[in-house]
Image 1 (tube, rainbow, N blue to C red):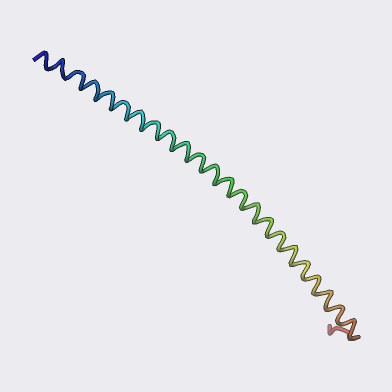
Image 2: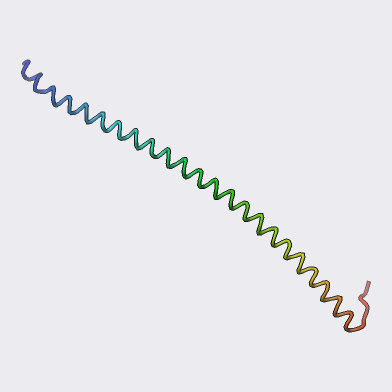
Length: 90
């Protein structure tokens, strides 16, 4: 009976080692996934900031372009009245 217990000891040790290695591997994978999640969140935050900045730039340029177009229309209307010799109706 003691011989059987001694023969089963290496099998138990190998099982414990395998269990410890799989636990350590799982812990390392969780650590790596948390790292990737933090990195992904930082990249998404940077993209959000860049998107907001670009949106503001685009809206500012569109506003400026709209103002320039309005002034150009006014100037064109003024010139057409001046060329025709008519006065605009008030």
